[in-house]
Length: 582
Image (cartoon, rainbow, N blue to C red; front, side):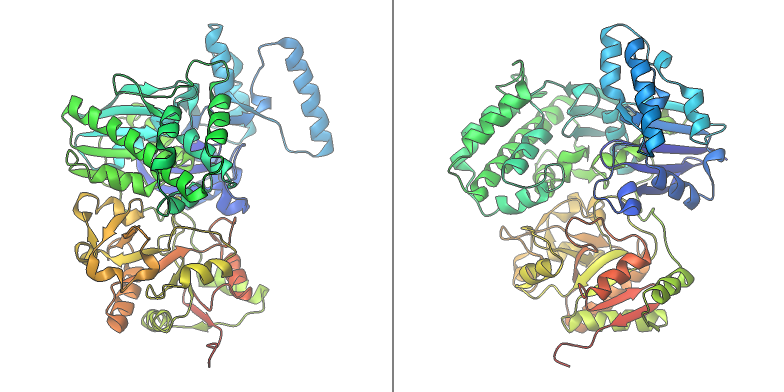
């Protein structure tokens, strides 16, 4: 047996396990620590959980696939001896006080070492790290951030050949965009952007911050607001802050080359938005991002002759951008890796080892599932019920589906906690809150109930067999839409019937549910369809504002006790408050 553990220990820490070349587990640290976007240290909880799901432990790991992100300082030797001694003394004092161990950002160290012509291996206490963390027989290899983005997009697309794009805030050595070719079983990087002051991800996140939201977390709110604004008022100004290089192959801005390029770009944007509504600001940043990214894609497709596109990196969490890429006449098919933020780089790192060191081949099989996290059986659920002094009715599967579908049809809010937890940012029917899609007012009152301030509508989970009746252009992205990574225009006859899941611009961000991918969820939607004539349900993530999606039974039950939901289907158990008018 070959066991590879991939690790992302920076922003949005996670761990993933390949067992004999097959992805068997992937878990984000935040779901276990209950700290949103948890990161900046080794993801110990996620490591142990992912290995447990693979029926293994740290002693059995053969290969560690790591990223140049945050790392415990005790395993790194600093360049300066005086600073090294000072660091050791500081660490000793913190240990005496019981404080968390200090971390070092390895990509910054790598930059300094490269500038001095020094080797990283001489500064990494590899054996001490492996022994200290319990990896008694493992080898450790570090991999590049954007390679860890690009490879899973290529590998899981199922495309024999494709143009592969990554774009984010920034990765190792400040790279924030790459354009690569997947062809003849090889992934080859052709172009990259690493100029400071030109990152598309930071451009968008600057606006997120300037509008009073949390950057690297609330960009989805900007996408929602954009549909309500006029991009023309700020388009020209924003085009100075993000655009294409003269050859059309990389991204740039007017601030590139200045001593404090990113800070100057931020101050420029801060001044530019004064006196403008947040809707117009959002519309402009969305329009500029889309237009630049689309031209970048079109130029690369024209140069390479490729017609399929695979995408990964935080910028491609932007589902409207993904729709516009799919709508290009030069594009035949689009795939977006579902864990497109940094959390997915644990999978990318493990795959880089599998392809580069273990003889794996590209492409792999098209991605079938992201249900890669922990699951909890009836006994674990009963224990949580007892701990919270809750009683529940245990139902046969058919009765559970009938009860949940009927509740949704009556207008009740149903928590649905089943099977293995999803990996990535989307709730895909195993840790979801469900409702009927017919209530146009639900966006306001359900968000209030969940303590959220969202501007995007809720998303639909739709039966895959009805996709082309419900949505336009779905044939280019039907595979990736199983993971809720792209928007489509909703077909006119359906817009008035399902207003709760249709945005003001007539689009929706569906999850297309197949019987093979999630039989229980497919049957639940089918049962609601039989009652209502509507082959989809409203699906939002099972969490309150600023909380990670629920992972364990206790968290789902807590939401029920707080009356954030009316009913809860948790494993085979059913809990329900009486109807308000009953």
